[in-house]
Length: 134
Image (cartoon, rainbow, N blue to C red; front, side, top):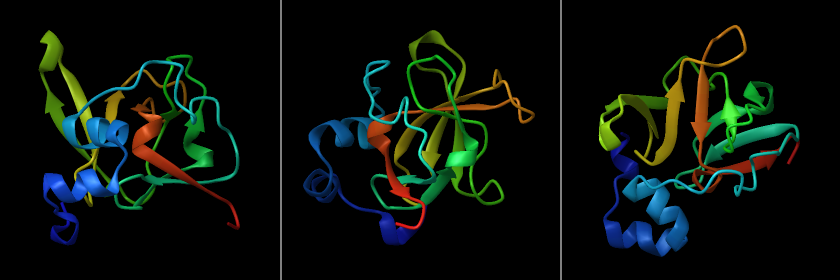
């Protein structure tokens, strides 16, 4: 995590909405099929909603029918997203967090339909979108 983006809980609470704070800082999850980016397929870049770090682009996005935005790869060279073993709720999963600020994004699974075989399952509230050319 970039120390320039290390903030106190109070600082994060001032910058994020209560729902974003719950997801990004308390590792919450939005209900499936409720996020604004679930069926969003415009050209552009998806960024961390907490710090603005560019994480995915439209070429990585696909419809997985899982209820959350899904991507098959991250931007960069595997350095944008940190992967952490997650054993909560009696399941073995891999949590994904923003490598710059540590914000919880969702989880990654190895059931993706593209050549990468990966499905980054992301909460809409943990990302923002910047349209291409915008």
